Every structure is written in structure tokens, then in C-alpha cells.
Image 1 (spheres, rainbow over the protein chains, first blue to last red):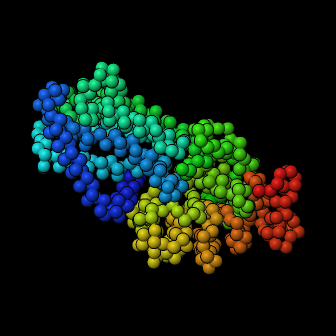
Image 2 (tube, rainbow over the protein chains, first blue to last red; image 1 turned 45 degrees about the horizontal axis):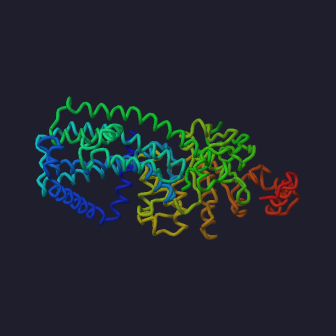
Image 3 (cartoon, chains in turn red, blue; image 1 turned 135 degrees about the horizontal axis):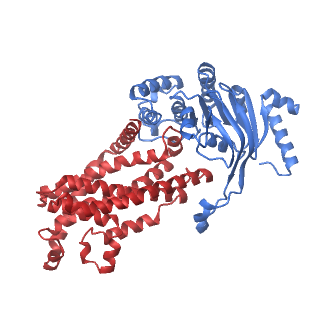
Length: 270
Length: 271
């Protein structure tokens, strides 16, 4: 109960701060429209017989890339929101004030990530809605519950990476270069703009080491093909493996990093 | 150990050296060499008002941060209200209110009330209870007029009061203050001290441990003092005892004599 009320407090705090910048909400809606429009016109430009052969049957490139762009940012939010929480608290001087309350740092970080995830989900829905309303995106027959299951597993896997990134930030005070590398590699190899199958064989093997690959595959199968749970299971299972591996390791490393910063006196340094 | 009492036993704190450039990547693993506190021991009884005196770099803030669980001691142990700062940090933080004296630490675009509501939830106060305590505490510290204004529009003095309100609204048994009046004008500082002494210490029985440079503040608030110099505890007792120890007529003179004597004995120039 306390945990939920703390999550609510963080959500209301972030909502109040965000809504104090009133024009930002409207501008974000506009920005997402331009993003979807770019995908639409780009897909018209690049459509070719070769591309059609690379895409799973019956899928338009626009629908393929729209799902990629709409959901790829879950990975960015998962990886960025935990260390962003620390960076902002350090910069505005609230970190010490937060840490002397009865709330532990892991709970503070988890709660700080809720608002970005909710905002991200709204943004994704807006992307899909623009696509459906103006550019002919038709997710008829989509398995929405299956997509939600893939998304939930993806978020758990990504959170592990986010907590590792926060541990790095605690120790070294600066943003984690590994995080940017992972996001860049995931963008190139994870199937964001094109199917993984068009990559050279050795890059396809590397792509299989990235959670985003299974996430986008599962989401596209669920939303564009209406794949059943049994068809989605390989993606969900692989994401579960990532989560089962990354979450305990990341929590352990984060606890260790927090202890180091309390020993070194660098908790609020930046 | 009584609720509100503080025990500090042989506390030592050694920090690793600061590195820059590529060597900064080794900093988290560097061997600690910079001694900030050396075998500091004292007790504060429940309901007592206790001051930590000392020059810049004496170790006052380090000690307060150990007691708030923001730092881990290198050696020794400390208890607050019977809870160990290393093994029971959440219980310690529940018992403690901390005011760092800094003018930051709030969400500038939220109102004072929204800030207090947020921190009250982190203190496990229910919405109703938080609302009641915020109104009551704001009235006591004199910020009722500012409750619905964004923090970025408030004066430093009002932010200091807001910070005190945040530190005391959950009725902690121990209040830790780090140079609480450093950015207040003399009248506001006197008001602040009156509130702490009359309302918190005398009426509510809160244990007060504060670090200060201001001897006026120490003389107005403290039952006993600890004098720190370069991390060493030079004296612990009442102000009368401090002056008597050095046959001095003023606290300032007594402090200077004790610090000079300690420097001569250790052969180190005083900080």
C-alpha cells in the first residue's frame, strides 16, 4: 500500500512539473504527427519489390516501421529514466532530501520511472492513432493482449539495463557511454527500420543478443499478424530470459554501487 | 536506548582522494586516505539540544550525514533512537528530520504545498494527515502566506523555513540541522531559533543535534556542545565547562585556545 502511494506521489509530482510547461504537451502531439508522416512518406519512397520480399507476407513497410518507431522508445525510456531520475535530483539538489525520507533509493528510482513510462505509452498510442487516422494503418485482427504481454516482458528486460546504467552513473557521476552504444547498436541491428533478416549472417547472430530484437518481432507479430500466444511464445520466452538474467544482476550491482557512493561520499556529486 | 537519543561511538570516516581525468574512473575503488573524522564518541540524551562546533572542514557535516545514513562510517558505530545507522537505515530515517541549511532541495516549479505534500507521502503520512500537518507546521514556521506559491518565487529565508517545515512535519524524535540559519537575516535567524527552542525542543521534546558556525546560535540553543577540529573531538560538555576548561571569558576564546593546544600537541597546523 505504501509502495503504491509513493508511486502515486511521484507520478503526481512529475505530472505537476510537466504540466507547468503548458505548451510542451501540445507540441509533443504535433511532433508525433510529423514523426508518423515522415514514416509514411519514407515508406512510399522506398517501397520496392526487393523490400516486399524481405518483409513478412502481407505487411506494408509503413506498418512495419511505424511499430518499430512507436515501440523502440520504450527501450530508450527504460534505459534513460533511472539515471535521469538521479541526474535531475542531483542537479536540483533534491537527492539528499529524498534520501533522508523513509523511502529507499531503489523505490525512489522505480517510482520516478512510472511517469516516463505512462507518457511513453500515451505517445505510442498517439503514434498508432495518427497512423490509423491519417495514413491507412489498420491493425485489424491484432492480438492486443499478446502485444501487451510482449511489451511487459520487454520492459522488464529493458529495466535491467536501465538499473545497470543508473549504477554506472552513481559510481562515475557521468552518463554511461555503454548506454548510448547499446541504443545505437539496437537501432541498427534490432529491426527498427528493416527486418533483421536482411542483415549479414554474423550481424543477425549479434542481433539475437539484443532484447529489442525479440521485442519488436513479438510486437509486430501480435499487432500486424494477430499472432496467437503460442506463436508469440519464443519472443516472450527470450525476453523472460533477459529479464531473469538482467534484473537480479542489475539490482545486485546497483546495491553495491550505492554502498560505494555512501562510503566515498559521492552520492550527491555530479 | 531511549527514543530520540543519539549514540556516536568511535566513529571514523576516511574518504578516498579526489581524482580528475582518466584517473577519475578509478576513484570509486581508490583506497581512502583523507581522514574526516577520528574516533569521535559522544552521547546525546533524549530531549537534549546538542551543538557541534568547529571550523570549515572540521567534520561537522560528515558526522551529520553519517547520522542521516547518507554516508557510511569507515569504523565505529552510531545509533539514533536505538537504531543502528548501518544496519537499520530506514528506521533511523523514520526517526530523523534533517535540514541541510541549503537553499536548494525543492522542486522549483511546484508550490510549497505541493512540495510538502510530496515529501509527506515519502514519510508515509496519509493524505489527510499530511494536509493537517502541512497547515499546522506552515503556521508554526510562518510560511502560510507562501504555501500556494511556486518555490522559485520564494525568498531564501522562506525556503529555509520551508525546509525546516519539511524536516519537522512528520514529528521526528530527532532533528538534525546543518548550519540552519546560514542564509537568514539576523531577525529571521532569531525567530528560527525561538521556534526550534520553544516549540520543538521544549514543547515537543525533540532531540536536537545541530552544526553551526554561529556562536550566538549555539549559546541560544545548545545544552551541551562538541568541539571538532580536523575530525578530532576536542571537547564535549556545557559552554560553561568549555570556558572553565580554558579559563576564558568567551566561548570564541575558549574554542581558539583548545584548537591551538590540539594543533601544538599533534604537530599539525590547525585547519
